[in-house]
Image 1 (cartoon, rainbow, N blue to C red):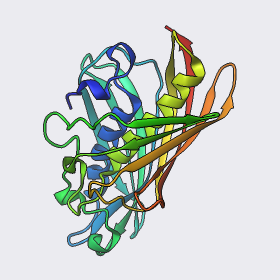
Image 2 (cartoon, rainbow, N blue to C red):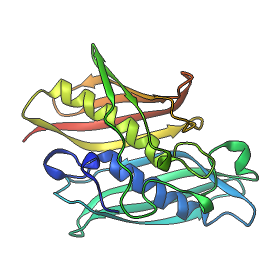
Image 3 (cartoon, one colour):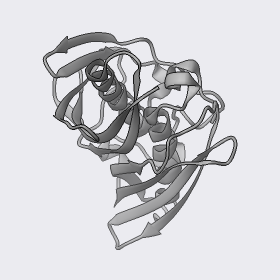
Length: 240
């Protein structure tokens, strides 16, 4: 996966949201491979741990392994590395095997069109940002190419929008000359988000700003105001 500028963090490092796109796509496909014919897979949660500070890289690679746990649930694990082969993060995904993916709205992995499947991903527009107290609110307009086979926002793209608001609230709290170093990022998917041209909102707020670690909670809302995903992150804030 080659990364456009919008998916790069400070000093050209891959943003945590970019790794979430690739993790969701790779692990989702690995998990779906365990489903039987005529059944589909939907993602319930995605968790990513960052063992070390990433280095400059404009390309990511990933490997994932899916494991069936029973007739209805699936589990996949994997890792992502930069173009120099350095480990950037490890990830795990939990999902459900369903008889009719059309009923869920998420779409099956077999026909999944997403931001990481073909060459360079489509760059989203710059969000409208508003801040209040210890929280921020980002309003996004996403391109149709970020939808899955059923016209809803791809799970990796949901995570990317969520992480953008988390990074923004950490940046504002840290002040100039410092940057976030993620330790953990996780997201729970609650309901699909239609990609119909209407705005999508991601919100984040700091729940604990410690000396060593900052904890942030966030959520992504559909145009109708309903919460579509909830996320959490832990990050260190280091001097550049």
